[in-house]
Length: 225
Ligand SMILES: O=C[C@H](O)COP(=O)(O)O
Image 1 (cartoon, rainbow, N blue to C red):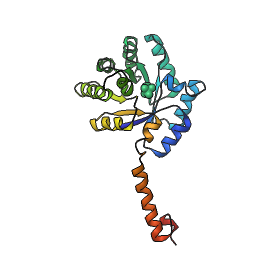
Image 2: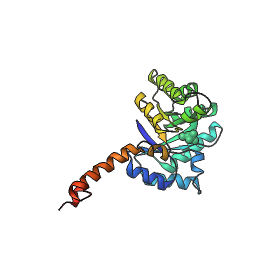
Image 3: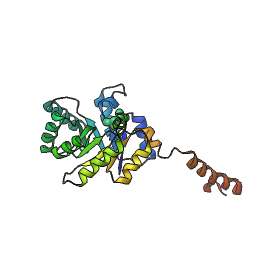
Image 4: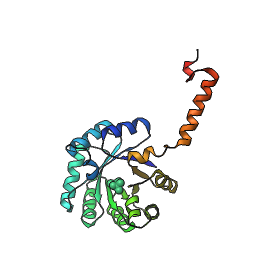
């Protein structure tokens, strides 16, 4: 499963890239609004840092299909190859996805709360569909189960489309979907850190250092004479 960072703060992106095997960055207008500068500058800085081989997702903001297509052109002009344009999975969005697919611009059907939305976005030509796990949970449904249903639909279709599961509250939700074979997930830095934030793990690592120090008086192999 590919793992993306759902954040736009460059310092956080740099930190996560240093420590974890991540595949790129996903954004939306709300995420960009948390960095107090022109969103085009933020996106460009992220692209410059991650390089042209990793994927960046940026969302069209306009509500009508023509505006979404125009936003998509601007996003791709700004960010170059390996850019995926997120488009809300609503009727104007499906119309835009069909047009962008004809133009060869990769899209992600986002704001997915139901399998029906995902089906229509994938059939319109989206390369990804992004169901919102935690937001679905908050509506009283089971977000992880909805993502599994969407994965089943894609597995039983000939659409060239992958699930990009989004909106996670915890790392266990991500792992359950990895186990199910979901192609991609995007998570906030705190959720990615949560994969290994565990006192048992930290304790075990420290025990090894303590035992080595008891034996040798040193804290690393390279400290030995
Ligand atoms: O772009 C969609 C986001 O991943 C949704 O995440 P959120 O529910 O944490 O805002």
